Length: 326
Figure 1 (cartoon, rainbow, N blue to C red):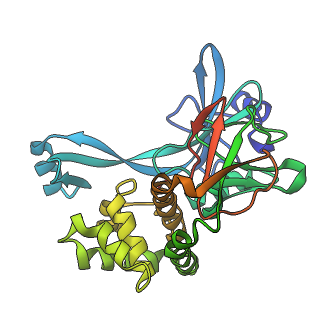
Figure 2: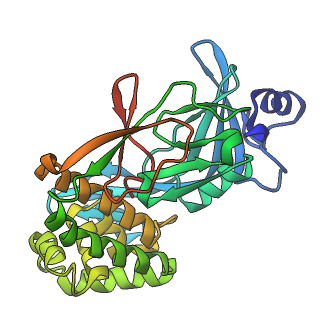
């Protein structure tokens, strides 16, 4: 992440003018790339830099009266009929992370985490690359033996020069007792394998069209989404993925699919599949704990793919890996 080093950003903030209309917004690269910039800020008496890239939409609560007026004006508003709440979707910049005086980078993305473009942005700043690995729990960084292989979790800090986490991560996987789990594996492994293959092959446009079609076929039975998904695992695995995601409503998936034009940075099919599988595996594990044994893997080394996901611990506390949700 050498291009995000503290000294480089400090030098830019002292030698270049901020963007027009701002006192603390500076270009990360060229001034024409105005979607890639950093903000100078202060925290606990220290100057920090917030690396920014792109935009996301967030909800702002509004009243029923405001909803009616804004809807009439053609604004992007939302009415949750179940909770009878109203909201306005507004665009806000995406923070990729915070660069601190000790030359560390803290991963701070919120909401849907790091979408495909954001992972590309981070990869461009690094000697390695960031990607979502559905069989390794979510977002990971990989750069061979020199810089290591690490899962990326919320609040994680890395040394910008070496890319090593400032705090050790304990990576805990699940080893399955084959004899005891034969039936359990048979019920889910084929579904996971086939669905993952299908999702990897889909374009984003095809995925959104397919998901919306499946949603519209069953929108009058929201209480049955999970039951329908379970019943379709063998006969229609892609339908099952969509219905599981709808039934779990991962990060507002129902609304996103119903209103695709109102969202930017949609998650791809394989990203949604990864989040769905993580949630489903967690449920399966809780219901069948006796079938599994835990295995701990060394931080920085490549650990094997697993259909059952991983648990990350830092200082004895479980942390959330980016990519579990959408």
